[in-house]
Length: 279
Image 1 (spheres, rainbow, N blue to C red):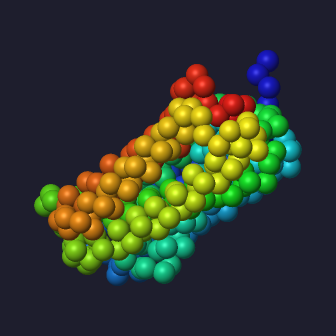
Image 2: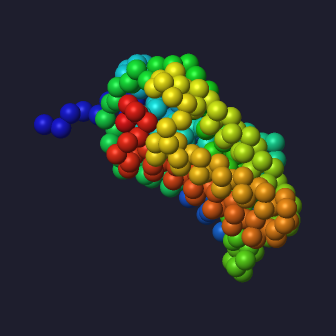
């Protein structure tokens, strides 16, 4: 007999489905040949995303109360918490820079992929190892999520720049500012991402010292986190030194985000030696 799934898992899956629907609706709205003004087009997408995030928060709170720890360990937990942090990060940025809301199809597509992935993985309960029961871990995780949210915002704008190399993309995003404007905004977020990732690595080293008695050991996750930092530094350096064109800059941003995504959602779950006690 198949055991019943906990109620919190249903809440989390429902929240993920709503986020995926928001991504789909964003594309439907932008591809519509005619319709209401942009703010009216964006409103249903934003509302659906907000509801999805709220449902995810409720699910995380229920799961946290039931198993006694936050969403730190399994792929299901990490994807759920990342949908909340990345979704909130994008929403806050979009409320400050309305132009970001017009790039919703690109940014939310990445969240939609994560949401769909989350619906396919195991929802099994996890147990928090002793190495995760340290306050500095919270700073490490929070800084990492802010870093990835900044990179997501930049990647969304970079996606618009690249999409406009095609006729259909130019038509869909014709009302957005020029590539140079989007490029400038995107690199502001990449600079913020560099600051937060640097702080994340420092906090991670402090956590490692408290948890395992060493600041750095070149385990796979630490190594890939450092590779991500190097890729981000190289991209920022190239952008400042050679003043690359917006399209080349967009390719660099997408490349850095891809490496960061692999580091966050790939390495910890495929390596035989993840952070000790992490999985």
